Length: 151
Image (cartoon, rainbow, N blue to C red; front, side):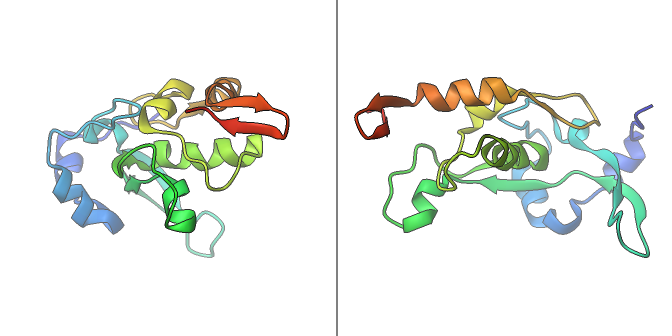
């Protein structure tokens, strides 16, 4: 059964390793991909599970998701501006790319991520990899030399 934080536990959480980003987004922030609030992304997690000293704690990490096409070569055109996402939505981008063997310099937009993740308050995401692949394929057209990006 999933553990739900109390109001006091949520108020005491200051963002852990991403405390500056946690404070910067403010109290009313909602993940633009999964649409969960800061309270809803807080989950009970075993941290460092493979170490000699794992411990249980609340976690609600945030990350600035960016288009890897731009960061890969410094020249590419970004499809979206850097956007703060919850850690699970940010990770969903990488998981989908690895499992589907997509190019490293491709990134799903926050809206696209929201189309292939199913979230639940205080829990982990479930990814629909078939949907992620459909989204990716919709961005490319077949050409004589393989796939090329649609304009």
